Image (tube, rainbow, N blue to C red):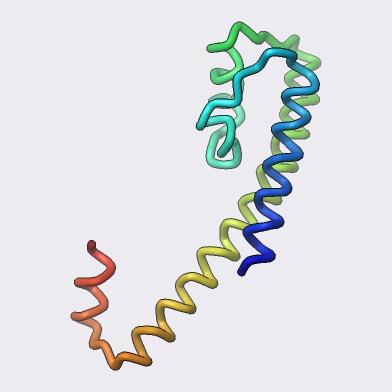
Length: 108
């Protein structure tokens, strides 16, 4: 699980570095830090908030780049979530929790 988190952070940092290198003075907001949770249109809106406008050709290039990194990051997020769920199941079984107990815990 640690390697998934490390890989996710590495991918995110590489993407953000590319943003910083291409758009001097860009502020990396919380939304941009987790760009993989955005749709490309939302990503463009985040850039627009900072007065960064892309030509149509640039949008095509950035959409391809964005989609590639987003896909890889989401793969890591899914692996992390699956591992978390598996660990939760093992802990619940270890403590002999009933389905009702699990529902109470997961609703908090």
